[in-house]
Length: 208
Image (tube, rainbow, N blue to C red; front, side, top):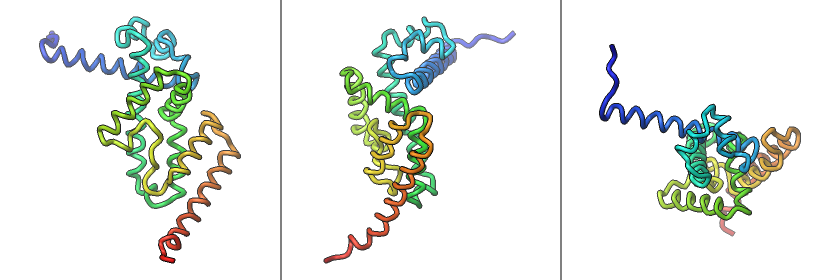
């Protein structure tokens, strides 16, 4: 007969199970926010999407504010991980076009779509705006600029701030499903503009 874990081992087992459940809840909330909107992410809706009873949601997040705050931090961490992995890819660091494609691909991923929805809702939701601001301050205090809740400064050195803003605007305009011809047209224009700007860099560095 197998003995049941006791003492610290049982405590660690319970903690791991609790962390897994929290992650399951937050992943379900993220998906709902990205696909249906921030206000659709109620405890009841999240419980159904996560395959949990509502009491499990209430146990880990007794009120919606706690869930909202945890979701912001969850998205913050997921975006940081994806940005870091993309920046480290050699093909991105060697090409403006690749950097544009890479950041556009990131913007279509669920954590980025969900964060864009939160930022949109924060315009009229004071509490949500405060949570996003707190996460930004935490990132700046830790010196982790690549994982800021604000849009990243760029994917490596090959993506400038203007391209970042244009790509984010395009992502909001075409929605989660993609924009077909318009999407490819705008990306093509950005790539050409980036390459032309790079060709002009040596001229700008020359003294008059």
